[in-house]
Image 1 (cartoon, rainbow, N blue to C red):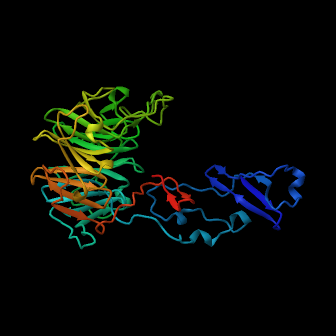
Image 2: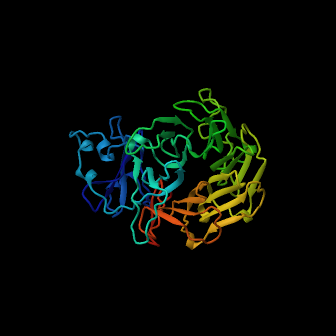
Image 3: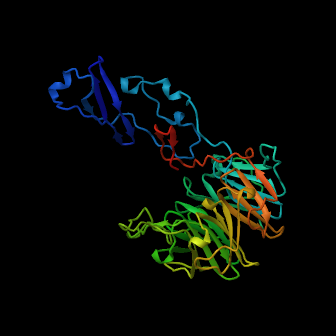
Length: 459
């Protein structure tokens, strides 16, 4: 609808609010004039007065929503307006450039993996939507602005958006990339892919997938589903609309906003990192829902079931399914867990590596850790260069530990047994030294705090 108000200091109506969203119109208008009566619309008060409410017709201007992956600029996607009628007049204001833009123009690395056959490092860029490939021995000099990647994979054809987890097949070099937000697909590329190319295979996944773990012995891959508190397992070669072969979900699982996942095929265990927030889906399973597809926001939520628990790592039998309780849980203040992200299992040495995002650290636990157990090693401190780490990878061939840091546009490398406030052996930077990430990711709104002169942006 269109709300019009009149200030009797002026000579005509003034449009206060008219916002059209799809089939709905939203207007915001809040004022009060004491003693205002219909007859007072023509009385000079010096204040705004509501004079009419006019519903938009069926032919009113409507916004057409574009997918996040749309390649054309938003202004080009708007419907062409007719030159007839005041409500359809074209305007050059839509082409106005912003006064300024707050945006991080550097890559932020959400995950890291190595191809040890080619001695290459793959860094998952969640900010600019792509993959950067470097030589394993690259090391950015302190005075250099950044290190140039040897090749880049990205663009609308790749379907890489909010890509948060990566797996490189140790035999074939195929690259598996998981998208978390706007593109509900996992995509797979050959090891030499570059540029804006289509994936050689893609798999439709539940919304909000985050982590990936591949069981090469049984040729299966498991993905965490963040929002629906679940783990779905597929055949490793699954593609298109293939269904999961197993689903782990339910109150007894203690899954709560799961992120990282890792498997130990020697001990037949599965580890899942949980941020700690959850709710209980209770609705009937829709008949059109694929087999082993997690129930979530597309069903019903149990009223009052939302809760927050301390972050944790839950441990299950390797092929757990249904509402299976964990066989043990790592949780408590001594663990130092704070938004645990990617996990990596060292089967040979019996250790579990944790990229501890909000803790600015990498934690290493014994593989059999349980309860409120302190980590055996804790890599953290100003010398480490670790800032919001979300990816971790152990290179057994060269006995090195790799960390991807979303907080400072870098990947850092350490001896595998590093502990404490240790400097990295090497650093690959994609921004000037000391440049921190803006941490703007899929912002949903913005507000201005007039008292503190600050812009507030929830992500």
